Amino acid sequence: MKVGRREFVVGALALGGAGWGGAAFAQQKMVLKATDVHPLGYPTVEAVVRMGKKLEEATNGRLSIQMFPSMQLGGEKEMIEQAQVGAIAFARISVGPMGPLVPELNVFNLPFIFRDTAHMEKVIDGEIGDEMLKKLSDHPTANLIGLCWMNAGTRNVYNSKRPIRTIEDLKGLKIRMMGNPIFVDTMNALGGNGVSMGFDQLINALQTGVVDGAENNYPTYSSGQHYRYAKYFSETEHLMIPEILVFSKRVWNSLSKDDQALIMKLAKEAQQEQRKLWYAKEQEAIEDMKKNGVEIIKIADKKPFIEAMKPVWEKHASQHAALIKRIQDVQ
Ligand code: GTR
Image (cartoon, rainbow, N blue to C red; front, side, top):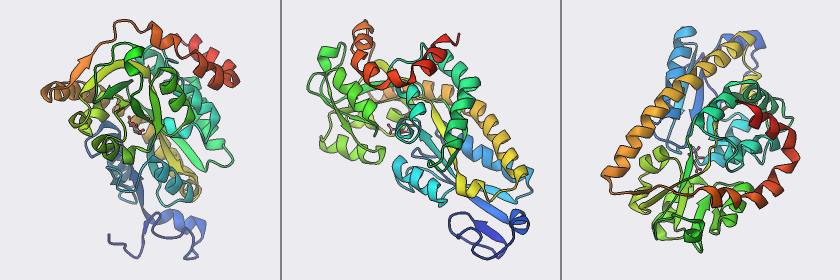
């Protein structure tokens, strides 16, 4: 990577280390690093790439985004840490691993919290969504700014052993879950064995049989080619977790107010743009799954799945009762 004399690659240089004053610094060319676990072309990645183009245009090339897709900078845990220290500017992460950082975010990680996609979108687009982003930005130790939300559909269980139609079918199966105690509890309450592990370790674990399966949305399953190891995909829809685009607070504090406002505005646009890309990608993923011989199983009776979540809600929801009520009241 070429770093010109007046060009900053954020993260590659210690901020302020060269002794510039704030105003002078604000005029510098800055390349803002962004990362995502997904490959180029995936809706979340594409939305941030497009945002970068707009940012470059709006600032005559003074600010730009350099995307590191496909876990080039590690899994989501590492991405969070790098954003916290200012080694990268943008990280697009699932709310899943954010819950341990900002407890309120965990309400989005509760199984079956949203009635449907329209409900989820209404919540993230509205007052509660704004409040939760602010909660993250104001958090004293998270060191992150919450920029916007992105869609990630529903999560569904897939495995290599057998079609899951009822919760009894899950018995004894080792299923990878995201790193957050809620998810291991969710899988265990469904009768499976939840195994917590980073996304960066998943393919290897599926390949070697360390786990029998995992759970995710159609686009992740298809673009990661998880069907090569786990062909039974059951539409359990047990989780509907929005994703979040975060920005390093350290880098944020080095930007002018105008640049901050511009990034915020473009992030809000990215939220809606990603959504369109998302719906197209979901359809494409389902087609790809069919082409690759995936058995897509409809769940005839969801009720036992929902009822099995009672202990998970008792353990993880009680402290957020008021917020949950507000979410449920969103029509
Ligand atoms: C995907 C999500 C990623 C990551 C992954 C996982 O749906 O887009 O951010 O959280 O799931 O299962 O770890």
